[in-house]
Image 1 (cartoon, chains in turn green, blue):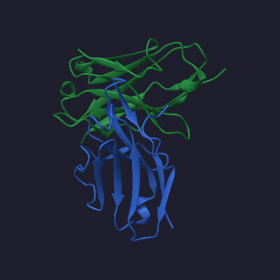
Image 2: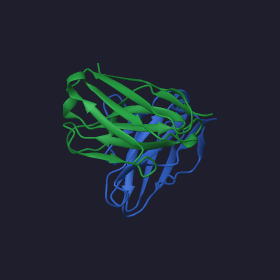
Image 3: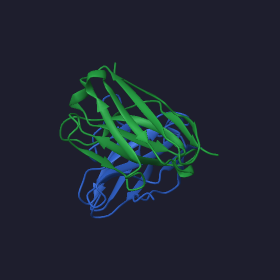
Image 4: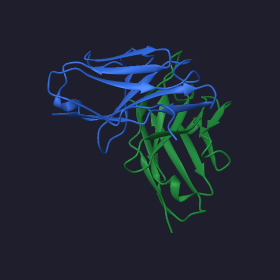
Length: 120
Length: 110
């Protein structure tokens, strides 16, 4: 069974930092692009970042570029999201998702999410 | 700001057919395949349709997708009470170099 388990969310002040983790199981981790998607309370989904299986390619949404860094440790089946210079508008549930392998681009498995609250 | 536009809500009675539209541009839907996700309140999104019209294993056949030029649609035939959820379209955007989601549509079963 494929599982994605996020952790690391919490309350942080504006300007602060937080690192999210997502531990994967049930599949060959380094065969898949891993993605972070966020959802502000009561709002829609927003893609945040993704990283290729072997780490050679990373992409970011413009709203987080220069502040967030995605990384992964394939030996630990874990993907991270380092979030610096946090803003109130970064408050959201952060979901880790696996991108399907092969030619089809879609997010085929999702974690349950971890809540990040940026507030003074 | 979301770059794919969906109606905020859609509704129908049990057994009816409901259709949700998703409008984009040449850099996203016009160039790439469209996916649809279903999300229940308090839950994580789940893939419903990928590559415009394909269903992942376990998704009922009453869900179908289509795409034409820069727009896409999700249809739910034989609407059931358990289909009450939020639905999002998504596609890769070549200009933004990002995966973009639609604004989301809340489906209600009357």
